[in-house]
Amino acid sequence: MAGDWLAARRTEVAADRILDAAGELFAEKEAASVGMHEIASAAGCSRATLYRYFENREALYTAYVHRESYRLYQEMTEQITALTDPRERLIEGILASLRNVRESPALTSWFATTQRPIGAEMAENSEVIKALTEAFVISLGSDGDSPAVVAHRARWLVRVMTSLMLFPGHDDADERAMLEEFVVPIMLPSRQALP
Image (cartoon, rainbow, N blue to C red; front, side, top):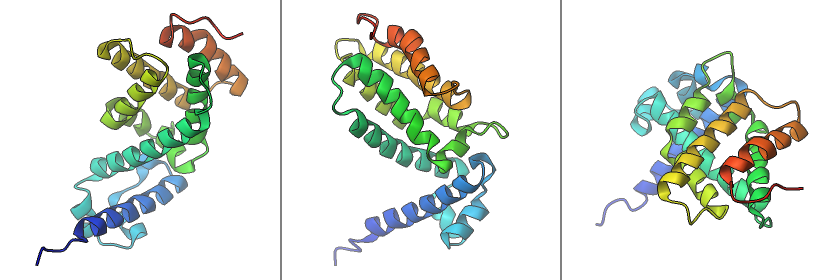
C-alpha cells in the first residue's frame, strides 16, 4: 500500500480549522492577548493537537498572517485590476488594502494600540508580506528597477501602510491626499502627479 494519500489534505484541513478558530478569537479581542489554550478550545481540539500543527504561538500567528496576506493580496489585485495607470494602481491598491484590513475585525485587532501592535512586527518580518509587496511594486511598472530598489521601496511601502493602520488619516480623502503628496513621488519618481 502506498500509504495514507489523504494525510496531507487532512493536515491542511485541520490547520485551517485551527486558524479559522483563531481568527474568530482575534475578531473578539486583540490578537496579542489570545492564548494557545483559548485557540485549542475554540478549535475543539486539545492543546497537544494544536501544538502538533503549530509549535508555538509565533508559528500560529505567522501562519494566520500569511494566509490572510495571500487572501488580502488577491482581493486587492481584483479590486484594482482595471486600473492601468501606475499612480492610480498605487493609490487605489494602498487604499483598498487598508480598507480590507480595517473591515476585518480579526485583522484590525493586530494593530490595536492597547497591546503591543503585533501586526506591525509581523508586517516588518514576514517574508510573505515582503514578497507580495514586492510583486505589487513590480506591477506598477518597476520592472526596470533593480531587485534592491524594488525591495527597498516595498519595505518602505509596508511601513507606510503599517503607520496608516496605527495612525489613520482623518478620512479617506485625507489618506488619499497624503498618498498623492508623499508616497507617489517616492514610489514612482519618474511619473507626473495625478490631476
